[in-house]
Image (cartoon, rainbow, N blue to C red; front, side, top):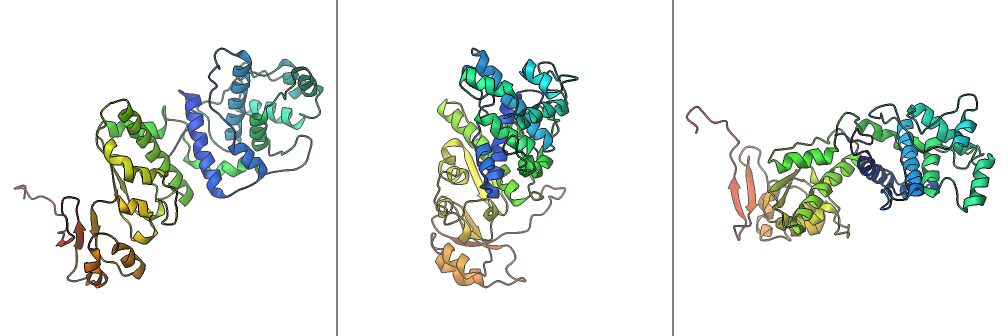
Length: 362
């Protein structure tokens, strides 16, 4: 699974979506460093008056450029090695006196990184910045850009030797990035689902945190689109989610946050034509809210008392606990206890192994 942080089209929206994935990754890493918390609080949303206010446009474009340079340093390959953003003639000269770097024209990412790095290193030294603050009553680099520059340069405070991890914190995410697609992976998946196609997403090779981030991101994207169509009175085609090893993805039993996406799909999915099928060997670890909203059950062998205790809470599964625990490899192949929405009772059935059709279609 891959995602984009630089793209040919819709650059700002994709950068923002990519940042939300990075935020989730950093939040789940448990890093409470001040500079990381500050970085997580930045806002990459385009301002409403972006097109009308030249000053706001300039500062926003510079912030996005600094963020892209930080990604570049972390190993995320851009769509093309060219970038431009609003600089300042005086800074251009100070950064590289003999051959000024002018970011108003397209420059390479290497040059752009040099521009930001030198400006941040000398932020408390060059008079231009102090004069600007006296005249304008505000910092040349606002708090958001300063947070990004700490990540980009690995320097916490200008003029100090305090080295921090900076962009190295997000380097593990680079292997999940692509610079070749024209649209985000969530949109591509959604488009295929709206066409009635089957989409298989293999997250088995990723880190556990990355698996959770991607799975939640995809589900949220589809759910939000379905909700938007629902409120706009547009038809939603039926979409069925399938989750393998669901206990690795779903919220845990003790988690009381019912706003998580899997809880919302289980509770609200029906009206949006969203269904969810999940497979797990650890029923007792899954959020009770999801279990309560599960309408069809297929239960085979369970040899753990905790799982059996959890199962007996639902319908009349308690009558089958002994048989669920006793299992014979020879006689019980395909034997399950089944509870369907259309059937008021749990019934034992034996499911045949899937067989290919013969030439007569039987």
